[in-house]
Amino acid sequence: MKLGKISPLAFSRMKQRGISIAALNDLLAHGQVERQLDGAQVIYLDSPLPAPNWAGRPQPRLYAVVDAGGDVLTVERRVR
Image (cartoon, rainbow, N blue to C red; front, top):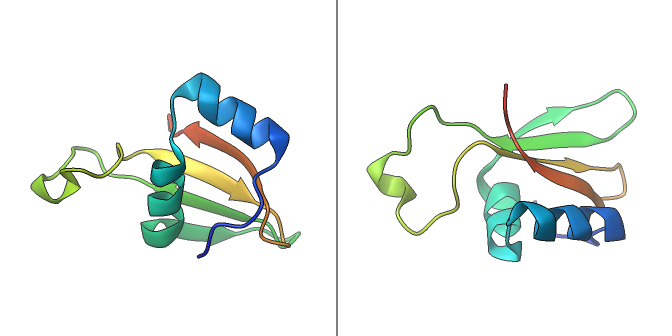
């Protein structure tokens, strides 16, 4: 998935949580997608332990909520 518009709230939360644009791009490119009934998507990276192939990539266990139009609504570290 290509990075679209980032909402002001999502950008603010990314800065607060120390999540970079590069991490968001990697998440969108390599994450698993759960489609919601309203057209939104939850995209996540989920790995119990970082593997050797994670070198240079952002931490696993991130997720982003993207609306039906492709705008990023929020980005967070996955805790479940």
